[in-house]
Image (cartoon, rainbow, N blue to C red; front, top):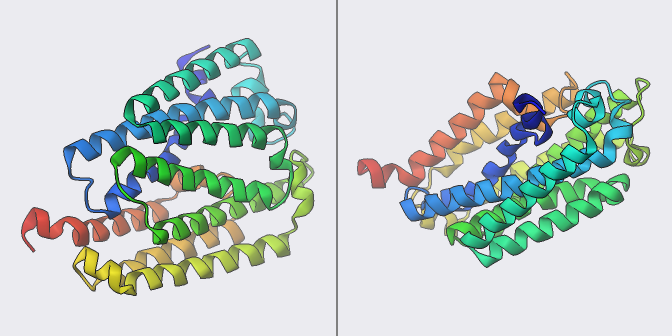
Length: 295
């Protein structure tokens, strides 16, 4: 197994999803505290190792179907570049290493990682074949990342963060299924859950979740408890980036049909990257500007 095959096997590019672990500390304006940052980074790597072990398991289970997929057939296991024995060994090492690191950080982080792995084992073997349940579990996985980040950094996760994370994850999951559905209707069959979807349902669901997400974010920005905690009533300026980001993602999904892999869409789309960086910079200014620059 080459290094390149190993990196592809563990899907290291998908570690970008685990940046959600930094969100609780970021919104609590405590990410600049060195102990908090250290624990958040530790949680990121612990969760990433466990998640990668789950990805390997998923590829082992899905290898027969992936060989019929125009893109997934290039995955190391499906392509035959990595043997099942090698994949099982890598999966085991990643899982054990992730749990050890999680245990060193916090018992709660350890429990969350174990529960996450357990849910994904069920997902890999059966639940991903049930429409709506599959995307709900994807969204739950993102929520568990946020809870793990809060536990690792010792920061409470607000109800606003829970709602908005779940909505955002639903949008990503629905857009992913839409991309897969478009490919499947082009003559490639690879996931039974797609039998419970069609394009009108997916389009309406994505639109509804996007609308609710924007409304929820606006309510967050104008919430008295939030403006008081942050110390600014200018949070609503950040809605520009949120709305533009969601519209761009809808364009990628509904117009260009490029959201079968949300991670790939983020890593390759310059527009999304600029909007995301703009949102982070504007929020960081509101949260940390006074502390760092005195205003």
